[in-house]
Length: 296
Image (cartoon, rainbow, N blue to C red; front, side, top):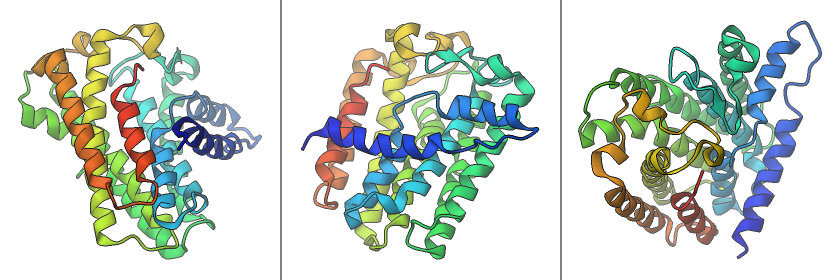
């Protein structure tokens, strides 16, 4: 298997769809420009790739999940726009470019995030590629849970912000990132299963959830490491911002050496979770390894 080629193929499918979004010419065109500015700013497209590949893993095709993949990327982009706002992390760079509020103003950035969240649900609800209307409804429910204030990114962001300036223990820090980071990865994997015309087995669903949980924690630990180890140029966003905002991180809690061991342990657990469950498990395992070793 050529992992890089398969990854590029999935990303190209997503990019082709996203390029055609939000192109209306109207009196609100600056808002649409702000939405496209952040949506098309680059990035690894991890979440939509997961949606496509988990769909492929049960039915042999990525096509049924393409709208769901776009939806999860729109929602992810909304969360980044809001995360960068002055009232949140107050960051000036994202993916090597000025953040949305620096280019279009804070009001337009808030509206761009709001509108991208709405468009994410509309895209999934209106899909004609998925397994049908019931699949679309399931997809909206999955994304809604991941976005929300019970087990989703809003809950995680609240805990993250309220924890600033305090020393957090392992359980508190893990809870933040199970909601803030792993929840949307879980949604991406489950969206792929929901879109598939071949119904996933209970064992496959449990495997997808376990994979997302382990990859999510490994991803966040690696992210915390990069905030100490990397440079602004390589990372595409300011380094050292966690310390500046007095945020508790895995790197502060454990130290870099222990973090490296933990990333390896969680990545190995993710790979065990999908072993023997999906037709493309080799890709899923290679993806987990690539995320664990990423430099940005």
